[in-house]
Amino acid sequence: MNLDPPNVVSIAGVDPSGGAGVLADIKTFSALGAYGCGIVAALTAQNTQAVTGVHTPPPDFLRLQIDTLFADIRIDAVKLGMLGTADIVRTTAERLAHFAAPHVVCDPVMVAKSGDHLLARSAVAMLREALLPVSFMITPNLPEAGVLLEVRAPDTLREMYRCAERLRELLPLSSERWVLLKGGHLPGDELVDLLFDGDRMIELPAHRIESKNTHGTGCTLSSAVAALLPQRAGTLSGVESAVREARSYLLRAIKASGQLRVGHGHGPVHHFHALWGPKNGQ
Image 1 (tube, rainbow, N blue to C red):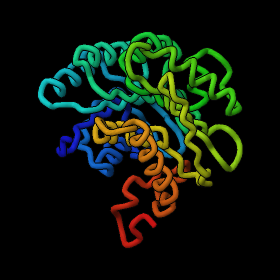
Image 2 (cartoon, rainbow, N blue to C red):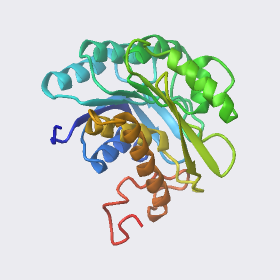
Image 3 (cartoon, rainbow, N blue to C red):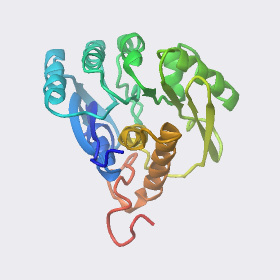
Image 4 (cartoon, one colour):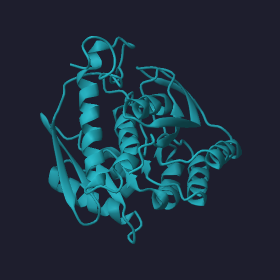
């Protein structure tokens, strides 16, 4: 087993408040023992309350960022977040395919916690057609799953099962690929995520933590999975182990988020809950 820290890159948007996007991903990689790299797919004017503006780079410059990084650094996993436009999605997919990027974890970011849309409707079809084929795992929440499948978002666990099966059909069927369908939008004190590889449907239950500090939870979970996949590769139940550990990390980060004082809206989770201060994440 390679003991070197894995090199993991986030290709996503920049949230100046640090709660989501590339900055949150880098924090997560670092907290979980991976060396973090970042490629900027979008700039946002954003805080914990709203997104007031979005600017995407020219696709040629995004291509240059990806090509320059991959030409020099061994990349062991990729986390995909906010990509914004169809051209950005297409360019990202083309370059990841060119470099045969491993462990691509695609978080199909569509809407911010504030309700602001972060993915153009015209980009959804491109995401399905170009990006999902190069993804090792996709991590949609229930509304995102509904958009990807062009159906109503599931609102029961039974509907989630069928949804996970249909999402897996969007991924290449001839190789190992995974769906992590997040059930946080269902009501109740208990939440269940589903992890599915086309054969095994694994229920991952957890007790819901009441907190308004949920900004960037999707970014944090997917980047945690990306950080851990190469560290668990080659082990029995490596993917399941990585996902379980990533979920545990996120739940602890939400629980400890009250130690932070960041903004007046949906605050961030505490990415460094295990490292900072005398409380040591307790």
